Length: 105
Image (cartoon, rainbow, N blue to C red; front, side):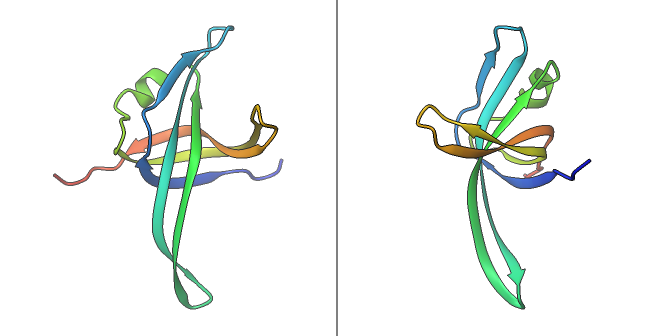
């Protein structure tokens, strides 16, 4: 088995889209925006990305119920490549676990 695991924290960038596939599987997708400062070769480097997150399965409803635009979360799962209608490939995080980050308010 080859390793494929990604954990990313950030802010929910857009309103989650909830759908049910023709086979009855619920899906939720949204964009997660990550910003941080990382250490690389002894220097601080600002990092930034937006990544599409997809959550699938019956557990989706409970896991994504409180996800709204601006929510701070950590998503963990595997990455895969999805090809859009324009034939461009896009990396997608298929989340198996999502945790809300307590803002401390």
